[in-house]
Image (cartoon, rainbow, N blue to C red):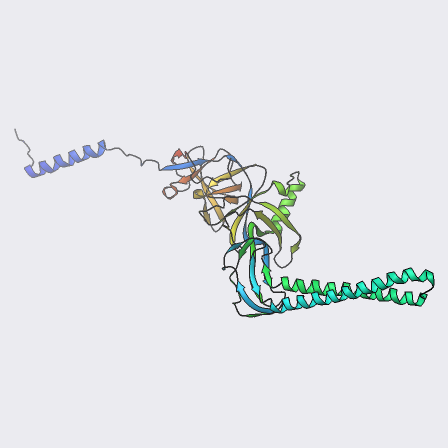
Length: 383
């Protein structure tokens, strides 16, 4: 009987090929896991509407101190930057010539009073003699005219004295209001002229104004809401300001002035709010961010800013549909509230949008989702 035998090396190769075929048959195709994303469910929130503006502070009283009489400045009674009280002495001008004028007018008034006294006594005696015929009516008329003339002289001299005393009082320049005074613009020994050079400025810091402007378009929109049944009293509006991105001013303010016309050059309406300023934290001329809170709440739809992407056609978000597939959705956004956007249209309540893991997904693929448990940096306006 003949037998057929394979070479040893060929037998080994055949066995290896057979084992390899068995292994390939045993391996099954395993699909890649679906990417995982964090989603936010679209819902409404209650919010207190706010309008933000850039404001600038202004002193409620801003006084330019000027001399009302001429003279040499003898003394300055303050240091620039001091807080002064109404009635405090600030500047003192040499009063010597004004004292001299007062003394002269006092003497002149005394002389006029003496002449009036003599004229009055003569007139009184004449009144007693007229019935006896010892004095004529013409003499009485002259006595009456003399008395009236001297009486007028007394009034004139009194006015001169009052004016001299007033000028003397002007040599002491007092603080007309309580506030903070600037540095002096004159030095001791300077010749001060009346109503010419500004000596210093004095501002009242408490309370303080914040001026801002509202655009005409915003005003028109607000008026439309009012005509739709919403009524707002300016006393119900609350104003807040920020000193910086991280520092809020602790006191709220109220609207105390609304202009009566639109500025044609800027298309804005000037408005002013007033704030208490007990610690002088605000100074005139300071820029601030002012927010005006409405007295009523609104329901709006907001989404996290992290979900919003932008392309040439506009802003869009990635929506996870009922089949857990990714869809692209164009959205129209409104006001921004901290790190969230108001949604005007493009999304429905209950829909899911991707807020984390955007780089992992593309339109059409299936994803696994986890709902966002909290919203960081939630707006302070949300209720």
